[in-house]
Length: 502
Image (tube, rainbow, N blue to C red; front, side, top):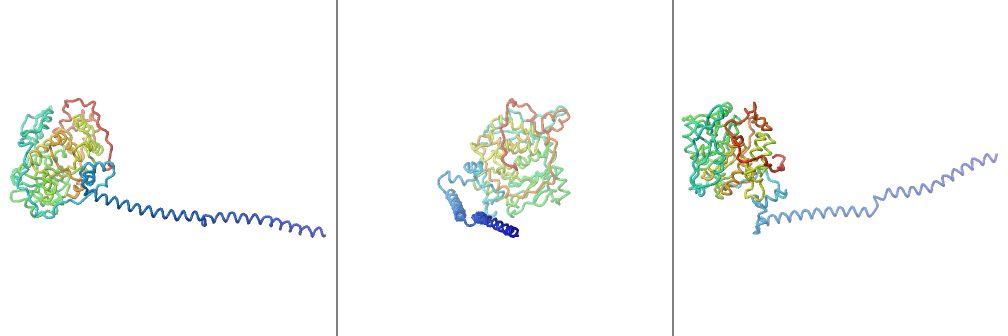
């Protein structure tokens, strides 16, 4: 009995002993585990580290703000400094700024920027005398020559049948010169007699053009009463565009049967000289002095643009203020014609193999890609606005520019820099910032997109056989006339795309 009573008691004691034996371990566990869990909150090293990090962030922020302030103060001081290198950093037309821009160190260019124009068109003083002709004093034009034979018939061509030798001679400037400059007899681009009489009085003009019904005239805005009286606003159109305009906007006729859309006097051209509408559009754009020979000053704007700056202010800002005679904007994305050619091929602006052939001819003739070694800001303009005085040298330049467009592709931006190069610095012009260019107008979309079969051609073999109908019959002869040099070994310079939009 005692043994039975002692057994449970001994069992209870053993259990108590077991629990007592377990309790020290529990305390150790509690002190070790829980204290380690509290360590991140109570550890003074981590508290100090956190406070130090916050102080570090505050100090770094203050230093960064001071650095920005110092840079801004240095920028203001350098722009006014007598040290040429420092002041050149602020000159957006200088080579130092351009080099910084190429390296990505200059601020990103603005899309639009204020134009430093005068405040009041009525206070603009117009020069009384023309700029004297110092290099070319007498310029005349070839207006008649032998007909071109295409195998089935003979016909006159608007741009003439210029030989490679004649082209080469025209780049050697002389006091008296006679060159091809469009408007050969029976070549097309004929103006109505009533319009010929009207434009004889146009000394100052704003000219534009619409071809193949892409647009309707957009009325200029912010035009002063003085400019409305002084300037002729001439919109050159083909037959297709004239019909399209009459169907979509109000066209009024004056007593002499001249046609008007608001400020614009419509100037229809009959018998279009080229198969390609884009090439036809280059006639009034580049040969403004031939179409309107009485003009002394002209501002060309593309047909899709609405001019929003008074033309007198434009002439004062871009020509008279700094005694320029020719002004054109810098291209937004490209400085090299080879970059521009690559963009034209990507966007299918003309046949890719013909663009390559065009560029190979230029490269074989020494036209290097644009670099800081050149004397120009860029070789590629934004050709949608051209501001010029009609001097003999400026007229010659535009004749030679047009002859390149007539001989090769209608992409005139590819030819501008080449003609500048061939004239060896004798042709002076002002290439202004692109952000000012975008502040001169409001851009309206075309009513439709231009498209032709030739834009999709990928190889010269596609022009053979039945594909020969894609060849232009009256333009681009230089692409099919045997070139006097061998181009087989010519490799075009590699193009690095500098802009996604370009």
